[in-house]
Image (cartoon, rainbow, N blue to C red):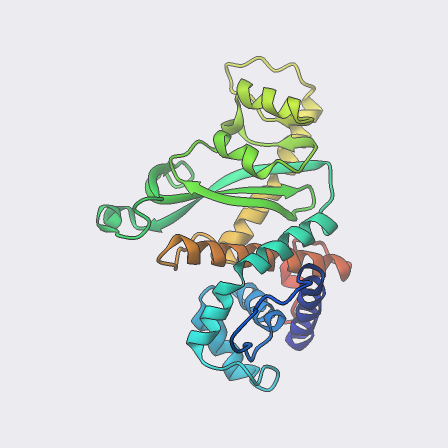
Length: 293
């Protein structure tokens, strides 16, 4: 679709969910912002989809190209402040979208690194000193300083849960935090092997399935294992999209509050584009089909 139609569709979706979750005025005093909350969120979602992960990039893009559509866009400081203040609304919209559109009994979980800075500068880095930590990422065979993102998706690829933790925190300890509202099959990699975690999920009605290590006996049917490995590619695809299109692994905020707000809007942008693709009859994760080049 043309970019104009894409922006309109995103705005209509945001406005619909906003009216569903915001039933009382958010502000009880002072002047109301010139731009409406749905307009701001729409601009953020569109900007993130277009690979703009900084507030100033998004503001400049809409100021230069869509001033007629958003005449009250105002100054950059007010725009950035408005974006950050709506983080809870964006979180609630994400929760609503994933609840309505992402119902499934098969889920996948995985983690991925979110470096704060280059490893060589980590000991001089002043931000996140009480939150970030050192760890090792096997894919690049290197140490890094920062966080680890923990991602839960359904079988189709919709993001159902997300959180971050210091990079040295075991992903098995974080998993229960983002899987408390699911049931059925949960696929994961070898990093989630744990008798304790298996027992916990069994008590919650969740069947945790992971590949086993070479020294572990596996009595499961081979076709089941092949199917498990095949569906795991979906979570790898989503992590790739978050890293490449939405710049999830680039930390451009100086404190945890602003970082959280930016991560939330990336997740929301991904899910709304997923839903829009689905409505158009496209494969939900083929985002390149949404806008004509």
